[in-house]
Amino acid sequence: QSVLTQPPSVSGAPGQRVTISCTGSSSNIGAGYDVHWYQQLPGTAPKLLIYGNSNRPSGVPDRFSGSKSGTSASLAITGLQAEDEADYYCQSYDSSLSGRVFGTGTKVTVL
Amino acid sequence: EVQLLESGGGLVQPGGSLRLSCAASGFTFSSYAMSWVRQAPGKGLEWVSAISGSGGSTYYADSVKGRFTISRDNSKNTLYLQMNSLRAEDTAVYYCAKSGPYSSGPDDAFDIWGQGTMVTVSS
Image (tube, rainbow over all chains, first blue to last red; front, top):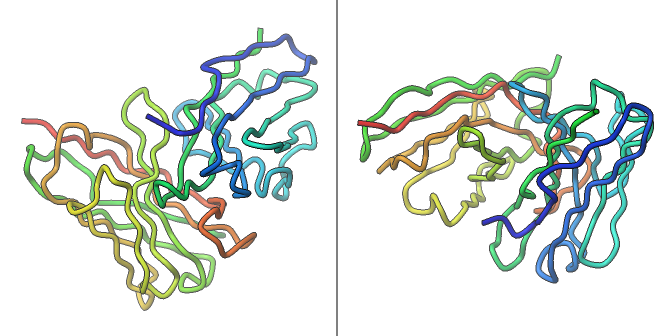
């Protein structure tokens, strides 16, 4: 069982804004460890979307944004597009497990 | 072009062994920590193991500790994962992933991923 919990699914119409939560604890996000976000399109490898809580790698549209507060983090997608339909994962480090950890994953559906 | 290319996956019987390789190109391999991440069919991502740039430090998820061994050959720009005592629950696509240049701590991001190699453990 993952120590980072995400909603199984979120959906929105084209152009809308959706958010994905990533809930952790005092041994991971709450301990100050960075949170990163990945997008996995069907049948492909994950792609880094947000690093260091809120930073976008070169080439990632500014429609994607990340934030972190306390023991949780969030990914927001504004101006939702059909191409955003994918699975999204958060990732951090857990000191109790002494290892990197991924969230449970969220499937984004564009209606 | 920065690239990671995994190989070595296949079908193996329970209790068997397999060695995965990940060939890196387009960056200074020895400067970055590397990890293996797996994804069981229809499931989420699971971090498996990591190794420092020099190879001097290794880390494992509890689910594979004592059975899997991560290593690297910086002269060949290649990452390895030796998997022993394989179980049905090890069936997954195995990705190698490069730690990004954003931090040097254990909470590093994975900025480059390979295409993955499938490992199936079944009799």
